[in-house]
Image (cartoon, rainbow, N blue to C red; front, side, top):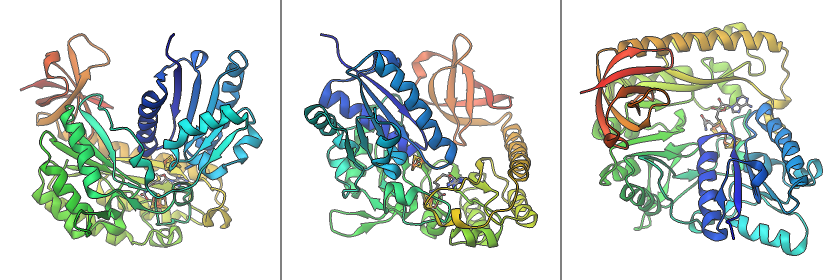
Length: 441
Ligand code: SAH
Ligand code: SF4
Ligand code: F3S
């Protein structure tokens, strides 16, 4: 008998990608499902969805239409929808797409096997989008690494309630995993050859993990412990929030060489008026003060950010303040988008009279400026020796390898396959718009 097949699509942030990886591991272990890239041969189809912006959400329903067609030729196919759209919509998913069998949330993904079994037994669609306390991690199999880079979730949810954002509603309040659980997971991955770990959460610096002594470890302390784990050579994290970016965390950049010289710190806007309306809890000056202290602790650190353009009421003057902040900080990259009103969030009720075309023009100007910055930073790397993690063969070019620098750039260079999944030193010899070229030293 051939193994049953799982077709799994993931949308949204790295938290969702991480969850998708865990779902695949779980369904392989518990149900013997093998992953497939072909929808037509799938026995179980899972969509792990995102609702951060309207476009992301709508994508789910167009995909569900396509999957309905595939199910017509494969009547036993089970369809499960999870992630943030599922969490937000719950049973309503079934009204719009009655051919869906199971709806699960980000905190109930470990229950998928039971939900599928129940669906089969009762013939009725199953919905569970509750937020049970962190039970999820206790019910998941130990992670298995593929390659030298891996992700580890350290906290879930968000309690910040920025006025534009769905995450606190879809993922629940902030909950941290116990310190030892995180360290064990990192150590298990290191044993499997992982060299670079990315610690994940919506606000990693809100981490408050229970210690065996019954105290709380903060994020700076967690970083110190992860740094002690043998085999781990590089530590990244995403996403952090300016509100809890403590001096202790900044000092970690002095103490912990394994912490990469790259930080992703979303600012959202450079206008204090807009930041207050977003309920971000800091001013542009406070943000810049964090960056100034970070650069003092770790000279040359690259800073990436998230920006929302066209928040309700954003004037030309507010936008210019964002452009000024971009000049002042010299961002290396950004995830920037036009504001998208999300149902149920306070900002969705604010008057918004800026035409979309004006917002789009602002976004394009902003992205162009940040791209220029990024290109300038890339040009500054020419001739320098970078410590890189070799990820695998380059996409193009025989004998070429592909690696990632500290500041998240891809560099291609000729080298032996034996150094794949290892750290290496590479001199940057060429700068292209999206990648670098180099030579092994
Ligand atoms: N927790 C992180 C970000 C999580 S969401 C933080 O607070 O910084 C990822 C990004 O999506 C946000 O940083 C924001 O820039 C963007 N985003 C969130 N809600 C949005 C909305 N309604 N419209 C447009 N962009 C949004
Ligand atoms: Fe959303 Fe704000 Fe929480 Fe980030 S901090 S996930 S933007 S509510
Ligand atoms: Fe999207 Fe949910 Fe992540 S809304 S960005 S998948 S937390």
